[in-house]
Length: 430
Figure (cartoon, rainbow, N blue to C red):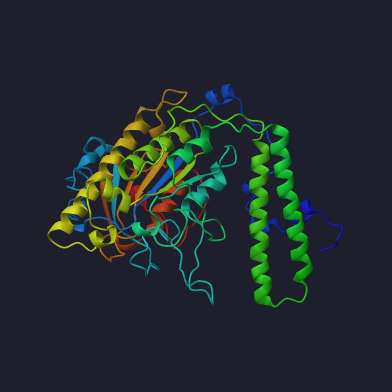
């Protein structure tokens, strides 16, 4: 690469690893006006909500022999009864490479083999939400918005910073404070436009310097070092894409908040309820069309008056631990029912509901205790054209990524596979 080659030229020349849709967030685009958006058909959205340590196997899953639309709802899912016709429970799925019994989220949306890269004991791949973000995130202020738990590793999620992993299999940071999420979505930046433009220009100059230095040391490196440097370059390109998107939206006012500013310090049940409200608000205002949320576990239990640890409850046995596990399950179901209520009550410009255009998946990579098969999976919303209102029992060890692939294709995303998928779930397709 000649020294006279411009940074932009360099980024184009080495940008093969960035999907073309992502590159469209750099450059000249025209944003639709509010009137144009009102006339357009409602956009599709997607939400993934993940638990850490799973569920109570004996009381959360419906009877395997009781499938179809007329199945009996289980005790753990009973708070969802009013929405029974609008969600589907899927049994039988797992990620074939999963081998960590305390990692409830790390590979949940990726289906990756952690040993797929020689010499590394931890590798991942792109998560399903970020695949959607590459397609639906071009025309919104935020391509996606990952939300994280407030209690970190105590909830059994495993490595990661949220449910989301980028196209290189690197963790995407999530917001863990509802107040922070609110301000990110709706608070006006008080800095003058010129100062914000200058800040982006300064970040670009730092990238220029980094690229120059990386180019200087590239010659004479071993293959392994060149591979590491290529990954480094990809990280720089990702930052460039984000800066381009920030620049596009500098002079576009943020949406008016459809809810009041949250109180500070929310934890547990109140935190989850507020995060769910913020998810609806973000989708309602078209600030983003892709959301993910890694749920708190330990703080939820504390807010429910349970003194046992989330880990110990996951290793339940008859008695106090079992009862605490069942309390947790019902709390999750009650909160999920409230989220569905809000999605149904929020109207689009054409009179339909937000629920009609949103695909929502709720579950975990862990079923219960140390079991990594039969991942608990609830699917709802009309955004992925799925058959709802039924209990579906698939053959044991069906790749969970078959479900994600079915959702992706149902949202109009043309992809033939995701993670360890082996095909779509035809029984799910409407």
